[in-house]
Image 1 (cartoon, rainbow, N blue to C red):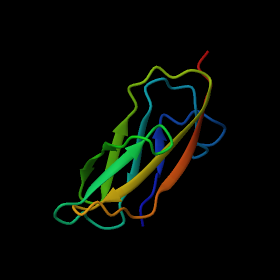
Image 2: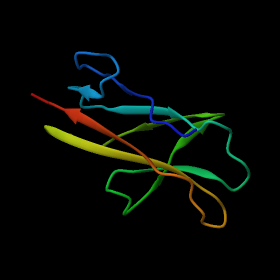
Image 3: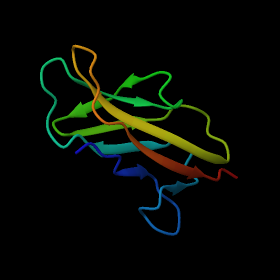
Image 4: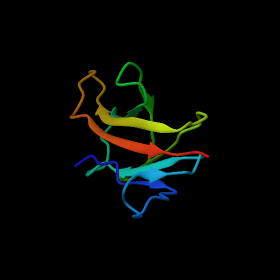
Amino acid sequence: MLTIASISTDTGSSATDFITSDTSLTLTGSLGAGLTSGEVAQISLDGGATWTTLTTNGTQWTYTDSRTLTDGSYVYQVRVLDLAGNTGPVVSKTVGGRYD
């Protein structure tokens, strides 16, 4: 199962609450199964308008958000795309940020 598992560094009251003050945000997750030939894992930062190919290693993926983050919430979406253009389910996670 495709997941968004964690952010680095999660500085909220819990290490798994997806709240951070870290302006160099890295997300990690799992694919559930390795990608087959022609498949890519992708991430969207704009509600699915555009997609960027993720770095994968076996069944794991990672992405570093290079934007300048300001206070607020950010929605990240991930999916798997095959060679024919078919997509699997989109998984979303909201990250809250406070960057004082």
